[in-house]
Image (cartoon, rainbow, N blue to C red; front, side):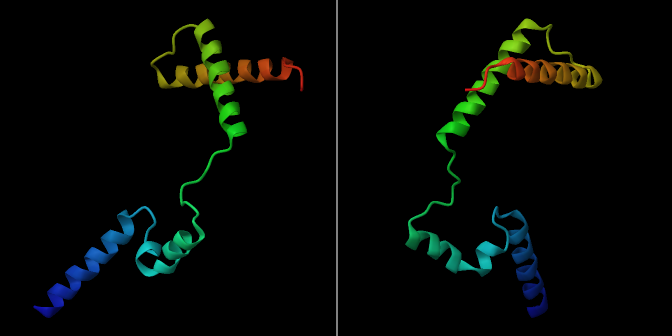
Length: 100
C-alpha cells in the first residue's frame, strides 16, 4: 500500500511540474520568489511605451491596408497569399515613409 501511495505522490509531482507555468522551478526553488518580493520587482514583463506605440501604429496600418483589399479568403492557401500581399504592401508603405 505504501508503494501505491508513493507512486501516486510522484505522479502528482510530475503532473504539477508539467502543468504549472513556471514548471518545477516553482516547486524546488522558493528563493527565487522570495528574491523578487525583496527586490520589489514584478514577475510580469513591462512593455515600454515606444514598443506599444509602434505595435499600435503597425496594427493600424495593417488594418488600413486590409480595408482597401478584398475580404480575407477562407481557404488556407489563399490566406497565405493574402497575408503575403498584406505584408508586402505594409513593407512598401513603411519604406515610402520619411525617416524622422
